[in-house]
Structure formats: structure tokens, C-alpha cells
Amino acid sequence: MYQWYNWKKAEIEVLEVEEQNKVFGAERRNMIVNMLRESGGPLSGKVLAQKMNVSRQAIVQDISLLKAKGEPIIATSRGYVYYEENSESTNFTRVIAVSHKLEKTGTELYTLVDHGVIVRNVMVEHPIYGDMTGSLMIKNRLDVDAFLTELNKTGASLLSKLTGGVHLHTIEADTEGQLDKACDVLKNEGILLE
Image (cartoon, rainbow, N blue to C red):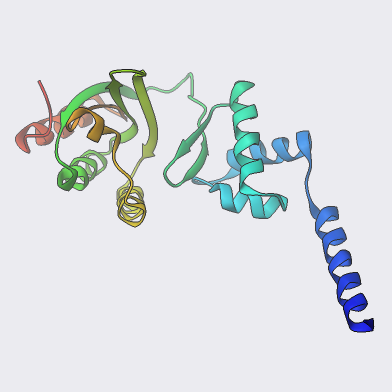
């Protein structure tokens, strides 16, 4: 009985320490925004949850509240990104229509990033929900590798599966020429729709 009492007492003390280390409400959401702003890349919900000593579901709810308040947080396959568009940016953007099978996903993404192009998102038109957009923010080969690894690991379907491979991307680059060259290569690969 004495051992059980000591074990139970120790368990209660651990729970009390964990409760003291939790970050609550508005303070936690402010910390999330600051961490995302200062981060050099995406932060996963799991990492944020560990830092705040809360569940991942609490982070998902916080992100939803922050988005509802207008914070430019994007959920990508690699985690959350704080994406403030620079009003002084001279980058060029374009929406392209593409179509390919799953096996060509790497070819499409590597072609774009190899030409200095950022793949902001993927969009499809769903017959019930209308336009559906998924944030990507793929900037380089490491991002493509991470995306493809996650795709293989999870076995998730691409949004383009809903439309027989047809989808749109918003792409961005420093120059119009980079966008043109990347699109020419995609056209030669039979990926770009015209």
C-alpha cells in the first residue's frame, strides 16, 4: 500500500510540473506567431505542441484562431509557415495549368525549382466544393524531396487525383524569364496544358 501511495504521489507531482510548464491561450498563440515569423522554414504541429507542452490538437485550434484573425499562416505538408507577402516585392507570379500522372510529380516540381521558381500552391476544381487550394511553398530541391518523402510515407492522394491529373499552380520567380523557361521545359515534358 505504501509503494502504491508513493507512486501515486509521484505521478501527481509530475502532472503538476507538466501543468506548470503549459503555455495557455493568448500567450501561446503569440508565441506561435513569433516562432513562425522567426523560423527559417516550416514548423510542424508536433514541434509547436512540444514547445508549448500541449497537444497537437490544441495547436491546430490555435492555428485556426490565428488564421481567423488574419494572420498569414499557411499549412504545408512540412508544417506551418508564416507568409507575409512583401508589398515591395518585384517577384513575378503566374498561374499555370498542368496535368500528369503521380509518377511525374517529381519531374514537375524539380523542373520548377531548378529554374528558381517557387511553387506556392496547388488548386483543383471540385464538382461539389468548387475551387480547392492546398498550400505548398516549395522553393528548392530539399523541399521537393521532403514533399515526395511525405507523399510516399503517408500514401496520401494528390488533389489532382480528384480531377484526373489536371491541376493549377501559382508559381513565383524573380524574373519573367525564369517562369518562361520553366514553362517551356514543362511543355516539352508534356506536363503543361495550353
